Length: 322
Image 1: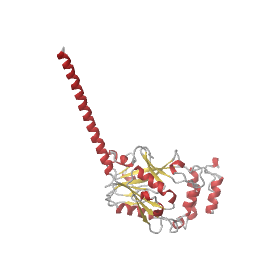
Image 2: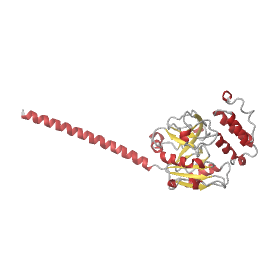
Image 3: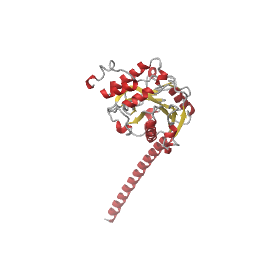
Image 4: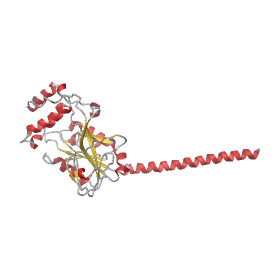
């Protein structure tokens, strides 16, 4: 009887010991995996390059958002008119170690491409990835942070990842509203075929244009937001079909209010399109009215501010809502 009891105790002790070993083994594997994953994410460094013109009201919101999702440093090219407040004077002091502001040359149509190329080439060896966006474009990662997104195995062979735009409507706002952008504009968004890119560092022959960089299709690989390789013929284009927003996309706050649209059309663009200014203005206004509700108040505001007559252009645009 005593021997039986002793054997039972021994049996239970062995089981406990086995369970302890199993627990320690599993814990060790999990700890190593988490540590490696953490170290991998910790090592990756991401820069953002952007150019600001007339976006002073949104600069700090822009910076805070991108630092929160995983950007390590933001390079801003100040393209504001000389008489306006400098971007460096607006940025919250708490961001001073994460942001570098540079002045641009005299404003012209290629200034953004020049600035993005300069930003990339000046820091080509310092960062693993470079995100190139405007100040009204916010990259949204559906699950996790930008660093957890980029360290997925599906992107190991990708030198460029293209993100489709989605565009919020103006919510019938005629004038500027001081609330944060994500509070003012909720889904559903308008999906667009146009893309912006995040680019791996150390690509010496990169030539950048605003939406998509020009690269060698024989030396580099371009991917969609889910890691699918893009056919070489289309990798340098600024639009991409089919539209895919499954894992990540850029929210382009293009239409914040009628007032802000008009101010954007007023500033600087006359230097670009002085020979064809009216067609440029009309094209942008039609695009705006196509996706947003047409009201007499909006039309009156646009016509007075831009000295235009829109009656012949808006006949078939949202006519049921006008």
